[in-house]
Image 1 (cartoon, rainbow, N blue to C red):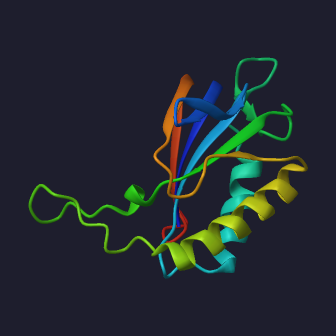
Image 2 (image 1 turned 90 degrees about the horizontal axis):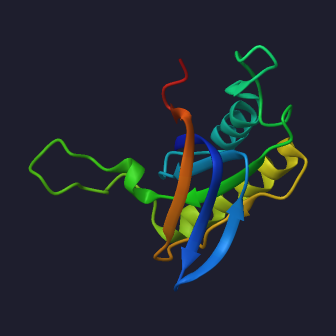
Image 3 (image 1 turned 180 degrees about the vertical axis):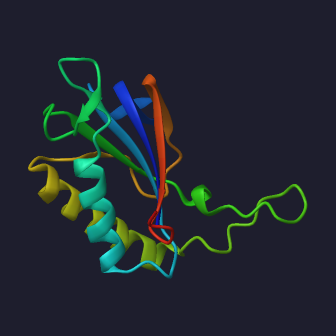
Length: 150
């Protein structure tokens, strides 16, 4: 499971020229799922995201989590996070899960992250053509791969 986490002042998802969901201060999380991902990956990554200290405290030091600032999260599925660019110039997405598995894992991830945060998580629509708009705050962008827990 791979995640790109961006600290934002606002973010939104538009589908068919209509805003589907939006958040103010918080995190935009792009999530990529592969067949090797398990419930343990969901638990670990949700806990990590909910407690990631990337928001400024009163001294301007990144010391607060999304929970501590009472921020929002927008979760967007993105299979292209598993792109392989080893050969040629056309990425291969062979590691990305097929929808049958990915949708179930995405829903479990959404429920777990909502539980960790203690509030509803905003989303896009799995597999839809989405336009994502954001203002990256900082900029702060964190990459996490559950297969590489450093």
